[in-house]
Image (cartoon, rainbow, N blue to C red; front, side, top):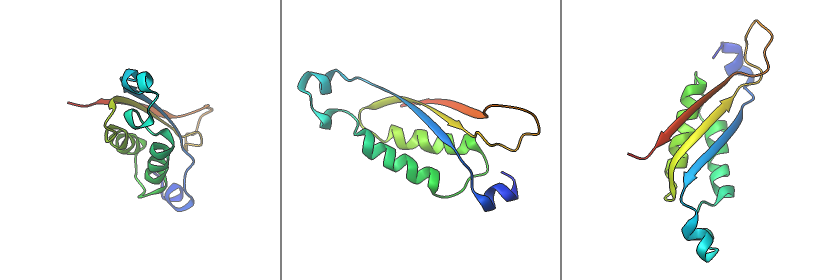
Length: 103
């Protein structure tokens, strides 16, 4: 991250795909047996808005860790987009995609 980026802040767009068995929740139509997506989104936003990092790879890893704290989630794919990255060439987006799973 360039000094100006740290000073001015950055715009990020985050995509998260969760891997989980939805059958228990669907069978009983029970939110407690799946992921509360609103609550998870709040925690992910807190990470994005929290402690600055130098790399979007680090941010993606921190977001994946939050997702894997959810009991129902067995794997996650996180993509962090940085649409206004300081790249001296025409581009649409710079992004990092990672996949993590429980051991």
